[in-house]
Length: 135
Image (cartoon, rainbow, N blue to C red; front, side):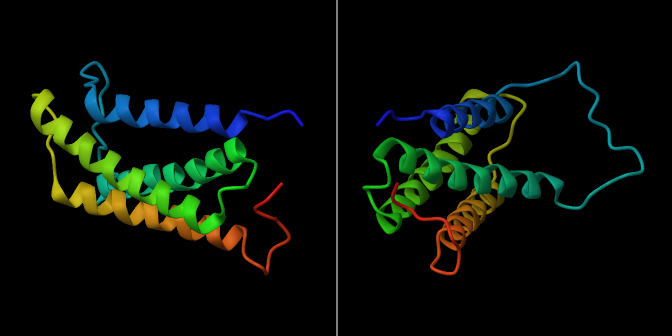
């Protein structure tokens, strides 16, 4: 049986996107929201980034192991990876960038997003749904 790599490529791409958006500046872009101002938009963005990280990360591990690692173990590994990665990105923002700020609130939003992504995976592969974890 041939392994697919769709979720793995998506996961790697998503991590690259998060890294670039977190560490690089885009001074040529005018990000002024004008009169349309969403409270806590930054934290919502962090939450969504890491929700997708958790969900796609689990799907990637499932894809690479053909479901043999197990749902609980996979979700634990991806959750720890997401939290460590989120903290590392904030540390890199603090140490490497001059126009980015490291915030504890961002780490909190990242962590909540990762938990939400893991919760979504557990719901999608619950006994109430037709999808099976193992191939």
